[in-house]
Length: 119
Ligand code: TYC
Image (cartoon, rainbow, N blue to C red; front, side, top):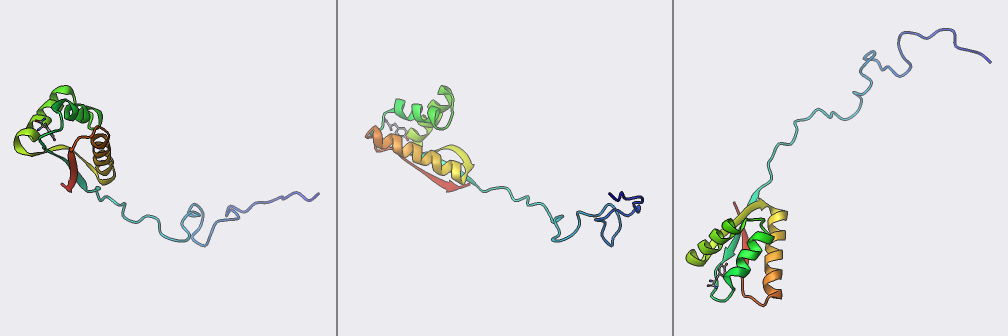
């Protein structure tokens, strides 16, 4: 068995830039970090003459995590003005909440409509 008797101060995998820079080969990775914020979307509730007020309040609490007081305020705002904002979310979250509202309305046989718009 032959044992190594000497190691040079330059380690075996040091490149031509010398020691301590062994992770700097290949594609540059120190590019600017992406800092773009995701676009936000308003979820809008539309008034109608048939959906019960309690049903709308329940949805605002269940889907949009509003308190009973917040939910009642939003529901009355929609009832009086024809349209109102339930919340502002990224696209995927907004889209999911709209689908949950429309699905619940359909299952309850209510004509409640809900949509989203870019904030
Ligand atoms: N206008 C409905 C009623 O009087 C209540 C209602 C509120 C319906 C908000 C829809 O998005 C709505 N029963």
